[in-house]
Length: 480
Ligand SMILES: Cc1cc2nc3c(=O)[nH]c(=O)nc-3n(C[C@H](O)[C@H](O)[C@H](O)COP(=O)(O)OP(=O)(O)OC[C@H]3O[C@@H](n4cnc5c(N)ncnc54)[C@H](O)[C@@H]3O)c2cc1C
Ligand SMILES: NC(=O)c1ccc[n+]([C@@H]2O[C@H](COP(=O)([O-])OP(=O)(O)OC[C@H]3O[C@@H](n4cnc5c(N)ncnc54)[C@H](O)[C@@H]3O)[C@@H](O)[C@H]2O)c1
Image (cartoon, rainbow, N blue to C red; front, side, top):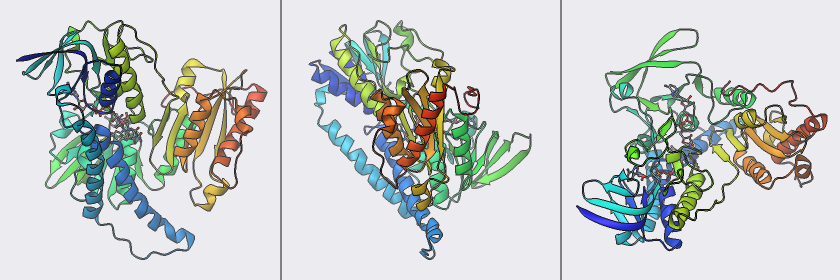
């Protein structure tokens, strides 16, 4: 057993960990980066990038399927599943390669392989080979898919999303459990690539949406092409020859048994904090076992331990892992002189079609923080000019503004090209613009952004009237 002394130890060489490492080094600290799994990051290996590669293939197939609506007839479309998956893997490997190059450039003496766990607040045990004595520690251990053992017992055809990107070809049928971002993105992509897909949702939530009106619009839009089973509980999964038998019960109590080639379990991810020996640190944990921490410094209590990225479950998204990792690494190096870092306006995009996006304060947050002190404006995309031109005229945008000040607070939407609308709105939010100031901005024609203007005009009217919502009291019931 060797002992290693350092200023900062970073646990996890994912996106948050790599950024923490760089920031700590830039602040002049001796830093050790500890990785227990493969290098390459979740984003590049099994997250953002391979999922968007699969979605890109699905968009190509969908564009052909939608072409006759414009009078364009491409002929018989054939999806070569093996070729689709080969491209996903090849491009994925290329993205992973860039990360591996970065890791390769880190001095060997700064890298340690193995799983780390605390044995004291300032001491880590890495596998059985190294004890690390550190002035500060950054926890950047990421998250893992939740996979119920009872479902996994049905065999290797029950998987989380990680396994999808290693499929050699496309299966004939997939049951997707969960209508969070992963379930919807992958479920729709597979369906568009010709796979028979059914999505099981125990409630009626849609991705990250909290606004019931937008969630309903999203459900309506996606149900046009997807077999969405709301209020349906998966009771059991069993092996059935080469297939899987899925037993479910719907909201009316009806039992169903159906066969699929694969089950994709997308019921959420949990932070990797439970095998870390946190009980030896004296940190106060929340009810999920995550240390309490300051969202501006990433510091856990008054300790020299910092937590960043999916590990803290605050906003488990790539840009957040970057920012939080940087803040945590910088403060770990400077401890005890920690300082708040830049936390940006929340922004999240689900790459479904239509896309689902949230920017600024979410509906659920406003219900908690603003109660009846905010108004809602909205715009439907059904008759929106440019959306109709593109035959993508579906969706709903709801924008929120503060009564009294007229300040723009946030938005939830299901809309064509929502990734761009959400950026626009998040920037306005972070700049602290009022709704009136936003309406003074230029809008071209014909563009989807004109839908934003329609919603903002509606919001301006509601703010003018001093009303909490266009249709009476705002139904503040998260998940409704
Ligand atoms: C299918 C999918 C699609 C996604 N799409 C998007 C998207 O489009 N846009 C977006 O913004 N976000 C997306 N995300 C989320 C994004 O990928 C994550 O938020 C981000 O990668 C988290 O980075 P991280 O550094 O916190 O964790 P990771 O990159 O997972 O890094 C954690 C590292 O810690 C290591 N580790 C864990 N425990 C220990 C230990 N005890 N000792 C040593 N090492 C340890 C792990 O091996 C891992 O390498 C997606 C996620 C998934 C799963
Ligand atoms: N485009 C993106 O930015 C993107 C894409 C993919 C993933 N991600 C990140 O990954 C995280 C994890 O995604 P996710 O979709 O796995 O989790 P999620 O938490 O977003 O959604 C999980 C869903 O599964 C449902 N669920 C839970 N238990 C269930 C059960 N027993 N049966 C049926 N449904 C059940 C939940 O109600 C929820 O709707 C996301 O929160 C997001 O931060 C982001």
